[in-house]
Length: 190
Length: 190
DNA sequence: GTGATTGCCTAAAGGCTTTAGGCAAATCAG
DNA sequence: CTGATTTGCCTAAAGCCTTTAGGCAATCAC
Image (cartoon, rainbow over all chains, first blue to last red; front, side):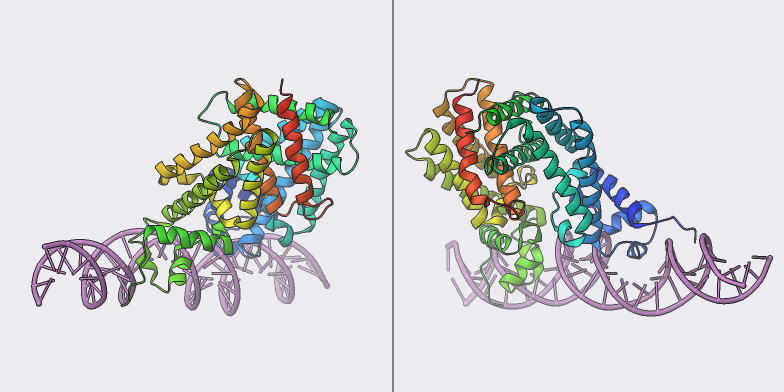
């Protein structure tokens, strides 16, 4: 029996790719086994169960996204940084819808904890870094973190769901104007 | 064999309640059959399949939500209307998390179409009604519809996922301030 | 009442998850 | 290089969910 060379990390990677192809919710231990041309039970040596697999995929995605966000923010501040951060999220979600969906699989926190939570913290810190350009005190800064997170995540979710497909202007046109509006808002936050 | 009195509508209702109890994704034809103390196959006379059931639940929820929104907006305008609308969504989601999740089950559109789409249109119209208080032209109005939808839906999603639970201030305190910020923003939309 | 309809049932096949236990391939000790 | 150990993938099997097909009985129309 030739060995395929499975491992937790490879399964997480392949699972992430599969998620982008068929949707995060459709990622199943069985489908992944088929992909490797291997018996289903074989995967259970590398992954505790279906939830564990999904948590690993979520962690891969959340970490990738944090890496890209950090790279995009390097050397930017203010409005510029806000657009860069927002675009990274939106572009990532459009390029990798399954992975993006995985990042919101919060059950991952209770299953894997450590790495997932760490990646989550990196995201928070990046948002706060952007907000440093706007001179907000507490609790305004936390409110602003929540506003940005909500709007960016909400827009991406609705766009991916097709909610903006049947009307003008295109989703791509509204986006920068909405981010600009947020910039203006932050600049004059009471 | 005593008849329980099943019907498409009763299944949708019971399914909605079940969704609030165990989560929309966990609503299953089997679970619903258990709830009625009936054989699984019996439900398939009233519901085409699992997707059809979920689409019916989604339609129930989206319609309920539109009803409540319409009632809340009666006699209000401007900032007042904005808060009322936003609160209806958030309160509904907190009271009925499963139903709220169902409203975002966009596959429903392709399965049931008609009623679901009609309810969706009612929501759009309600948002535009609120925006009438802000004097926006096109494409600003569409941008604003998307901004409101994104922020409100995003906030609710993140709050329900527990993203705001581990920091101060409470999710309930940030909410009105964020809606107020949106009001300010709309008032000065370029 | 009788006949037609409709509601719920039994049966069965197919898919996903998960556990238990086994053989063989890779790896390591000496 | 050989033998021992670990590790990877396998077969088998049980449990739950979905969906279809076909049947009997309760209910309704007249």
